[in-house]
Image: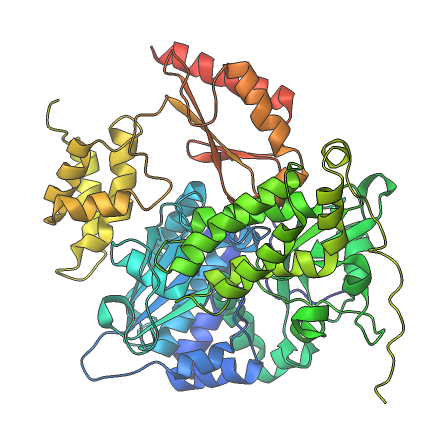
Length: 453
Length: 168
């Protein structure tokens, strides 16, 4: 049984409310941090834990915190990134909906570590009922003395406000989020300066994902070293995975990052296998931006080892033969799914969400969508496949923010691994409108790796 | 058109929201206030409404227009009483969102982006709303409607018609 650090009590009746949450040991990390630790000691524990940002980039949280500038007389801010919108990802929603006090507890401890006296939760506008849940929980925490002036008599003041976004994927990018928080269009900023030096209203700011900040609670309770013992290598602690697509049990699961991808898909405890006895064709393991992998490369690395659900193993093989942990949005495609069509929906998504600031992304995402639509509807040419490849290559790395890369990678990986399916669409324009290419050889065992001479 | 004005309780909420941000940074409250304005003034943001928000925040009307036109939840054109926002991104597509969209078009006799002649329903397609495990889905007002089927869509349409009839 996996040790659950975040979701263990998610199903307890009434845990959404303060009384049950507190009775079950809630807010003990605030008592410990404010009562026994200095802010720097809290940061040190987070460093020792090896916690990596759970939003997608996987940057070490403790290190991010230690970068925050502390100029005299300038307020600092912690901003919680709850603008969850990466296709396939719905773990933060789950956490906020069922355990709002866990996030608030994490926010209080983290705000203490960073010296933030006004902390914001930037929630995507569509999660409007989640905003009500958070505001109720903040009210309860305030009424019980966990938020406000002189918390626990320790001289630390804190207010937490929920800020409602209004539908823009780009605002999940931290500098776009800060622009949006300032009441502007969500256009990413050129870095440097980094938010840790000049963030919201030019003040030093740390932006962390919901799950990251919730994980601070168990880290303080059990200690950073103990937390780091869970998991493997640099994938410490537990990770929330949201699963969807062709699986029997879609939902949000907490894993300890030692489980294999195969067990994760087929075990009853997690995804519960693929419905109707269908075969696994492909999977996007970490949210729509990360490379799609065919079944054979998903389950085993090129070295023939079982692939595990963690940062290192999912990335094993680089972008050519591997993928990424990303945001933990796990999308499964069975043998009846069309990779061309699925890639088209993602291209459309990125075209819709491009902020329009950089021409490679603004124009390129639109071109990719149009070309993919042509191929999908049987109007494609063979040269379109190379054109797509060329466009994605010219977007990647040539934009202010990573949305360009995020738009390029899914197209690149789809062509890299499923080129024959694209070609089949072009060569069989009529047939491709009636049936799908199917499983083809995508689940065949990998050829044994040959040692370099 | 008369000058839009918030009722006292909404105005109090707006003033409270402004206090969440540092002095002089009241512009930060723009998105939360646009949500209240949209809910209060017929589900969309007219130029008059946006000008009013600019007035409340003591900023230029243009600053409100440029924000309202950037965010997909801000409706800058009139919409029906009930807006069906159906997700069409990958995970929802895998689970049949296209059939749901087609069914809504056939049932309501409108295309995506249009409003029924009685002003009751608007059909929109949207990109990922973070409900991929509960697909196909749509947003209806404040809440998500998940695991959609044709039967569920029928029930939702019926429910909206009944609510509208009761409120009139």
